[in-house]
Image (cartoon, rainbow, N blue to C red; front, top):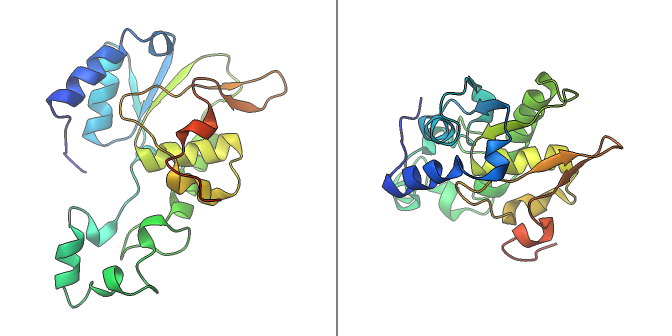
Length: 188
């Protein structure tokens, strides 16, 4: 398990969440099993039971976890992942992945599995405390983002609530932000 915890600024941001109207309305809390997500959930919803689920983890970079590109470039075994076009797409790809890591398809599939496992027909507000790639994948699964490559440029801020609501037709809509404004640059 990744033991990376929140830094001082992250703790302060997470503590401020508990007064956010969107966070106050949460009735059921889900979190990644990584410490920083659990800590954020605890600060945002003190006293609430946290349903921990490893399917809400950040995308795994496998053998590259905690390594910098310059470290990989020095390695005979891994430098191709930095300098060779046939291998260096692993950071933003639906097929390529780091050795023993995940690609976007893997994350989309595990978040879809998570979403299918919770009772989405219950009329309650749930909070999911997770990580950028996982949140992007949840958006993909609920909001039918197309083309899927748009996910690569979606800016997900730390400690910012993103609200998705189910409308009367059963479709999900992002109501807290204008979806088009979450993209860093237009690339489609």
